[in-house]
Amino acid sequence: MAALKADIVGWANELGFQALGVTDIDLATAETRLNDWLAESYHGEMEYMHRHGSKRSQPAELVPGTIRIISVRMDYLPQEPDDPRDLLDHESRAYISRYALGRDYHKVLRGRLRNLARRIEADIGSFGYRVFVDSAPVLEKAIAENAGLGWIGKHTNLIHEDAGSWFFLGELYTDLPLPPDPPASSHCGTCSACIDICPTAAIVAPYKLDARRCISYLTIELRESIPVEFRKAIGNRIYGCDDCQLYCPWNKFASPTTEADFAPRHGLDNVELAELFGWSEAKWLERTEGSAIRRIGYDRWLRNIAVALGNAATSDAVVRALEARRHSSSPMVSEHIEWALEQHQ
Image 1 (cartoon, rainbow, N blue to C red):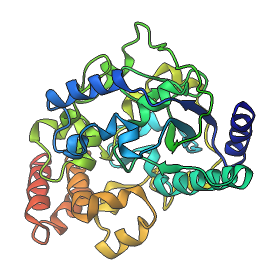
Image 2 (image 1 turned 120 degrees about the vertical axis):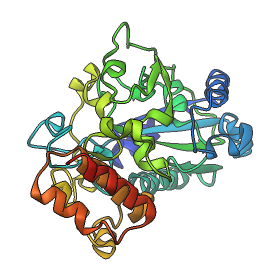
Image 3 (image 1 turned 180 degrees about the vertical axis):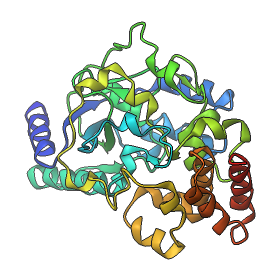
């Protein structure tokens, strides 16, 4: 098994993964944290977080026969000519979370993990496994921490001391008795950069996130109107938020990805809000094909941009963009347009 594990690490590297670790299925500590988090209602409208009962923290209930989990990391930070921090709260341009600028990571990692499983099968024959990439009741960050891929930081993202936090995670649940890796230990120390920089004070305590206040939740998960109390703080962030990562000191060690699939598409890394608001639904579908952005739908896309336009510097272009959709949008989008126009009076 030790020799097989060494081979698996090599194959994973060939497939474009930057790291691989193995852990057993003991998630008791993570289960307690999850239940406490749910009890505080910090999950908001994300009902799926408790829909599957203990399957999320009991891997063998989700996939019978599982005794080990292979956890993998794939870096996604795109190559950019300018510091993305300079784009935050820009007077006219949009900010999109860097993970969503390229191809949908679910598709990229899932395909590579399946190829990894096939490489293992070609070597040892049939074995029990199942692939997961952020699409099932799986505690991927706790699993990765246990597998030694990093520690869960105070912002609740995974951090590696040599690679920062700009990476995706994927899992291979398996019945192979591979030797596990030692878990990672925390190196956040007394740092509070992520807590201090959060625009909506969503990190309510170290290692505790109130998703209901998080801009990623508000712009992606929330299906209804964005609460007025958070609209100014959202600034120009129209899909997700990276502030806690952009200001984490450990990310000075992050390296830009060479993965072509994660390169920004259609100039979304530096684009005018008014231009995006003018996209028809057909154009939006064309420009977001194969992108994680598709998950929010066209209506929420417009809702988010309307808020950002309300926070933009007043200009003829901004006001014209809002006025153009004032009487032809859904009630939810229209309400956000009216709020945005009020900001420019």
